[in-house]
Image (tube, rainbow, N blue to C red):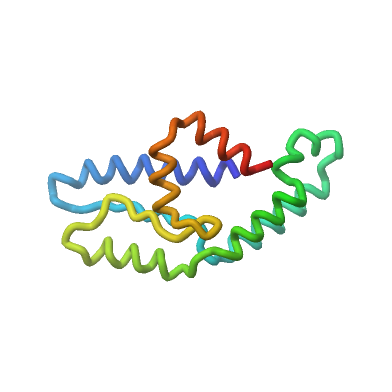
Length: 140
């Protein structure tokens, strides 16, 4: 949800500031940005959402029906089922630590079977409003 996304965005900003601050001492700072990796976080998130939705009055539920529809929840389960093993993030972290020239950003794992690096490149390539529209359409 929004708090999770906000915290990831804050970590990106912190990473950038720290990378610039540490540059005079030739200390590399890298970000690891995984897409979907197998984790208990998805099950916990689903349980949390279902528990909260049980107490939402139907008239309020209409406001966010597209976010919490059965079809969307099913699609999310399908995407999570295609998640990579956490080893992909371990490999990225290992490279960042032992490489004499680590990458600034490691984009790893996949989203719905598509490599996250491809999605990140496409996201960078298209106008932001188009990206917003594509993201919104995928949620419906």
